[in-house]
Image (cartoon, rainbow, N blue to C red; front, side):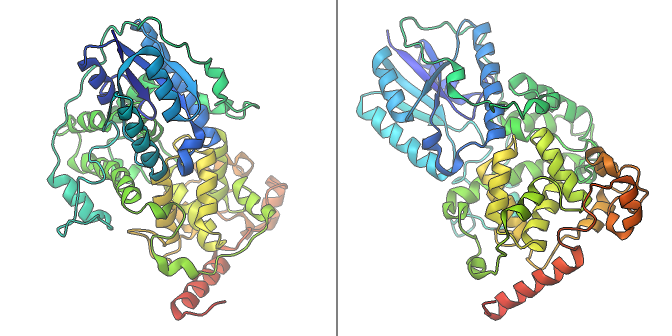
Length: 476
């Protein structure tokens, strides 16, 4: 008797897993596998922080499978070749997986599907990641959306509950199949263990995702539209890495949120659902405009005068040494936890792209390397939105002032003090702009930069000049 292979990727869960369910529906023994194929990922290749998360999430998935009498087998190499060889070795009749939407992965997966079918093997993919696949929502003219608000309206018009289901209690292991490799052979974990501090903040895996959802529904959902902008408070769901790795289905998240109607205020529920649909919009844009991975969505910015800064200057931004506390606090939170509050992400990105005038791609590359929730679609959309070059973007001339942003969203400086403890002895408002009293700053934090890398006012003026030159068609 043959087997049905389930190819796990960014769907590291057993509940609500369409590919797993399709394999079970065949009545064949199920063989769960993971193929490590970083070269096949192209621009979606995982950075160091998310690789470390993946290692733990895979281990959690394997443990869940073992509880049910099965286990995860690991393979390394070209995904199509590995799956073809495995299917031939174990007499597989079918291979199932859940779709991904990054351009390079879509192309790779299409070829894998063709190759398997040429072998006479049933090869099918399912939607395990989105409420709406990128081609399901269209404008009135039948094209892709370029602006979020009409996309949100279209999503709400087609909103319908999706069923959730539980993993099977038993998954007997097929006999006489290749063993695969030891997971350590994948080398997903950093050699120096710089990620060790992450795991006091996160629990990768399906159980961790369900716990995070429960904590959010019972807590931060209340007042979400306001609280989500406050980095000094726990006001967000912190579900982004769990959703990225498919440890929880988005429709299970929606079901838990919708169940609060009549209990939590409507504004809180709809406010969160709107943010969840931003994630959908990112995948929609990436699918329809794959060139935006490298190029500006708005081609007007192809001639923008980006600054050519040296590595030491860029490193000061990366390491949280700009001298602007809200920026430095965000970058240190990122380095310590593999995550950064979304409001701070926008402030940090704006400072790099507008005050420092560094191309958004450099910031996106660093986020991809250091975020546990690094997601190509969200990363590209977010950076282009802040830079002013993307779809539905903030205009380039709308420049975040990092000091006033900090005053508004971290009014007591608690977030700054948490991640920059050397500044905690400064009184307000110096905690947000310590260069305004050089003597006080030197007294409490002599090693902190005495001046900003780029003064907020001067940086704004330079950015506006560059933008004006672009509009005028002047090459500066």
